[in-house]
Length: 330
Image (cartoon, rainbow, N blue to C red; front, side, top):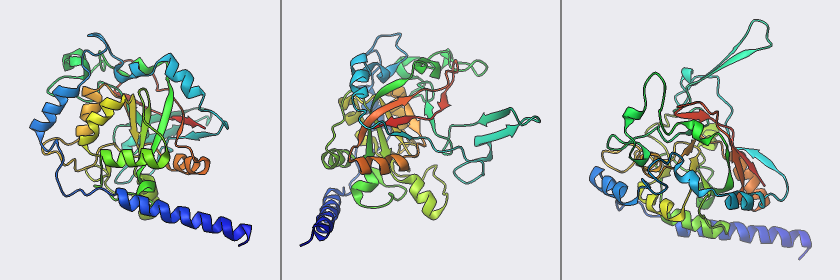
């Protein structure tokens, strides 16, 4: 056998093994998982929330898990100096997943200045949610009442300005499309703990305290292949049963290429249980609508699914979030 044919044979064996592994870890979804309804979700919320964990006055939430030691360790992941943006370019054209008001770019008469307008919550703009963006039982993270905020001045507590110093830590790509051996997951596909741990085994990476995890469903690959669709209420994503695992592993931030939750949520009476628990319960900010396609390609080329992650939101006092361009560095 020649060297060229030997290399081709090895690659073929690797592809067959990967496909077999993906088939072996496919999770049966027929049996409902807890939480299945509002009562079960509320019980989980009361059991695992981080209220008071870092003090009664804490407004950072799980950002507290990113210690100076964690940041220094993340810097050690930089080996080749390759940088990859995780943001999708703002889309000027209206579509079912991108309302006209989501982004507007207006040039001044001189052509030497312009104005950007974002309505970034939704499914069109890459952004980060602040900890005042969601509530549960009329309370924000750390048992803060919504009366701490006002319509005129924004969030009196838990605003996005709390992340002004930036996020620098270890990022991990969880590529579930690759795990399943498909270009993208179909909408409404739930992701369970078994899937996450199967990816850890396949990618030889373990999620640890202070990490940011990015969930790739292949949303942008599907959009490129089939066109835009109504992502709201119709997306692949994490099932609420993974929330205790996220708490146990000490995940600091969660991101995805859509809005994190599988939708419909499979939790009767709770539209976005993952969003709700992460933000209002665990104090975990969420990266929404990340474009993870270039990251997935680079990670596969480098055979490394961990990287140094940097991100810095616009520190709007009392803001419910911010457009964002996170950078992965390999």
